[in-house]
Image (cartoon, rainbow, N blue to C red; front, side, top):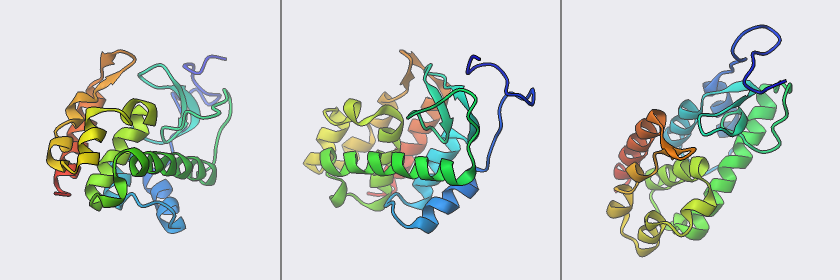
Length: 174
């Protein structure tokens, strides 16, 4: 069955609560990304219990999870939260390692985690944004978010909005 087809209920997808997943992750206490950053990421990704293909053409489930997605699998809140937390921690590790994350304010760090979550560490670690973060030029790094608006080789309106939100969050960290 194609991931683009409707699920067995005939609906376009089985949605779940972004707020519930964020609450589970915040209660676990393992992520540094602040609540505003988690809200930004979660609401931009949305929450789906069943697999779908994202606008960039990648099989996805939960809240932006692209690891081990299997057609026909429906996940519960705990599974979605565990995968999302793992993906957030992966992005945080990248920001810490390549973007001087430990020296960033919580808002700048959370914004950097958001762009890393969606674009991937391999794409960010040698980017101008991360070079500026390593150099301590946070203001100039914040101005780089609008460059990260492509998915599947084309500009995606949702990424334009998200990049603007990330830039604002980053600037609030100055």
